[in-house]
Image (cartoon, rainbow, N blue to C red; front, top):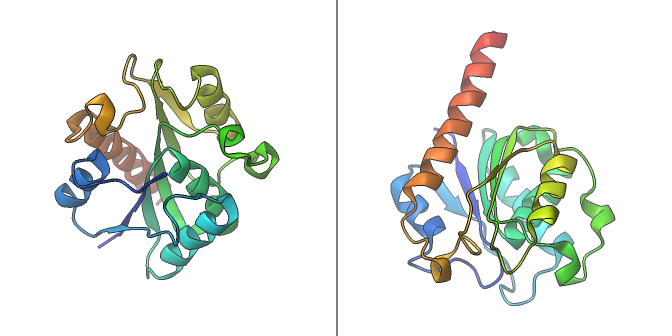
Length: 179
C-alpha cells in the first residue's frame, strides 16, 4: 500500500486540525516529524521530508500545509522521483520566514495542486498563485477561508479530502494511460 506523508507547518498540526483528520481517514498515513516545530528552517525541514520519503519502499503521496508546503517542495527538488503527487494547502510566504525564494524557484517533477484562500493572513493570494505557477501546480482558490487551519474552522475538511482524492485519481489515470 502506498504511503501518504502528512507535512505540517509551524507548530505542527494539532489533534483537531484537518491534517490530523486526514491521518485518521486515510490508511497508510504517516506524519513527518520535525526537530523543532517552533523554528522552521527550509533546509532542515526538507531534509526531514526526504528522510521520511526514503524510509518508504514505494513512492509517496504528500499532503502539506503552510511552511510544510515549502519544505515538501524543496524536498521534491532532491527526491521528487519518489513523490507521486502533492496536495499543497495554504503555502507559506518564504519571505515571512526569512527564507530565500531562490531556493524554491524550480518546477516540481511530480503533479501537484496548490489550494489557497483569498483571506489567508500568512500569504497573499498573488504569492500563492506565484508559487503554483513556478512549481507547475494546478491552482485552486477556495475563497474566504483564512489560513485553512483550525482557527479558520478547518478541522474535518471533506472538501480538502475530495481535492486529494481527485489528485490521486488524475495521477492514477495518467499512469494507466501510459501503460
